[in-house]
Image (cartoon, rainbow, N blue to C red; front, top):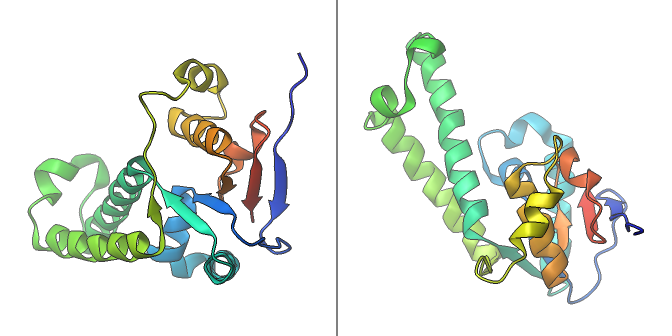
Length: 184
């Protein structure tokens, strides 16, 4: 059996075609909207330019509930880490649920993150996850030491729906699926 490799394009050189369908991985949404965005300015600038080109060419950007879950959970953990430092706490002795949830910092962080999610939802289209009909065996088979369940799931979702995957996750570049990937 011969495997096809993904077609990988660099975001710096990528030419957006009219009417395409795109699926942004969580790490790209994090670069564009989360509090880490300013720390990777060149990447942020390139992905922001790609986002603008996609919208200007009437293409679709799809998002799933799993991406939103990753975005919210990862963002809250980043805010938690910042809170630990600002409070002078020791990370190994501080519990996210017990010590952080319910604090004024948590509530302010959640408000900020939910505003970011609202912005993301305003520029993307909700895509059903198709869990009831997606090939779970293929996802589980594709998992390796370089890929987790979510990564394999996104690749399968893009393959099944002919979506172009936009990611900054090098693990996803190792897929054997014949999908198109845009990355930094």
